[in-house]
Length: 433
Image (cartoon, rainbow, N blue to C red; front, side, top):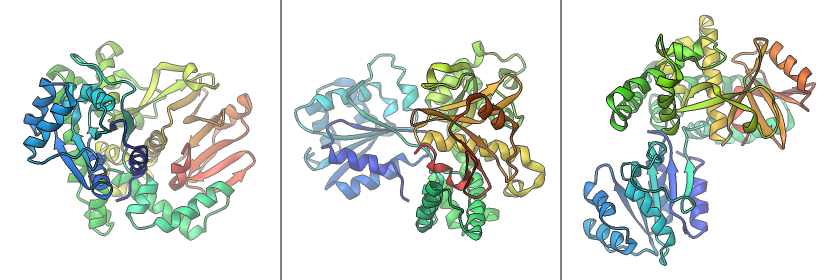
């Protein structure tokens, strides 16, 4: 399956692989698969090492920082002679070894141009160094996320429609109604399946029949997340992290304007659960949107760090956490929860496009879902799950701040109504790209 991050790997090779390439992201987003595929296609030889499983190689990094010695010992254990000109070395699950992360500095500084790619599912947590330093400026770092809707369309074999979506987006031109409705149906399928590669592949293997989709796939990914919470934190902290994570469907489903510690537990507060949120953010399992009361550039200067919302990294996992069935996505009784999924989906899209998440709220009067910095101007983005797009909040925002235009993402077709740009939900991947 095609993944956009492969272009980053291709560029890395074109730039002579001088710095080690680091791919970080949540568990099961497809890091190992795409790295192996790239190495097979781009190099004569590659050596794959899983540091979590291969303790004898992990021990090498604990005993020496000499790059030539590390390479020779790896070659001996793997029973191969390593030609650094034609061989790339892949260090997977690198977060288990602080010394291996530190060694990347020496690979970058070495006279020989060693080609090193590393990956980690919880590398963000590992960046809290205890005994070794992180090689700042010595590594080419990129985040990998679940498949976005464009990659999802490609996986389903619908590459041909993507150019049409982009043309309609750029020209505010309506999509053919039949195609528009079909894409909306596929979008709803995506809300349930999500963007985890294994989940998407399983959906394809059952001929895209949601009633036959094996939900055990998403359940097992979530079990892996909870297992990591226990593995990388103390028992007491793992319980708190799990409680925060499990509260997200409740937080979003109650249409709250901010994350509430009281929904984690009755006496919940920042002092007891703040570190748990930090852990989830660093592990890339959740995304955070912070409040902006004064929408000015740069947005980061004006955000309220302690007033925020949390979203799950993958909307399909949120669907599973909320115990929603495929039928719930089409029921008229679950409008609020479809709104929850749509908002999470939009957050996922923006993060994949390397956009920071901000939202605007004015007292108890109005709230705009997201704010984007587009060409030096703050553009409000409103997200709706259906075609009913009436919004008092967006009207209040535009009257108060007079942006040149606004973006409304909904089930409506492409178009431009006054200074509001209409973008269908299935085309959201174009925002901030």
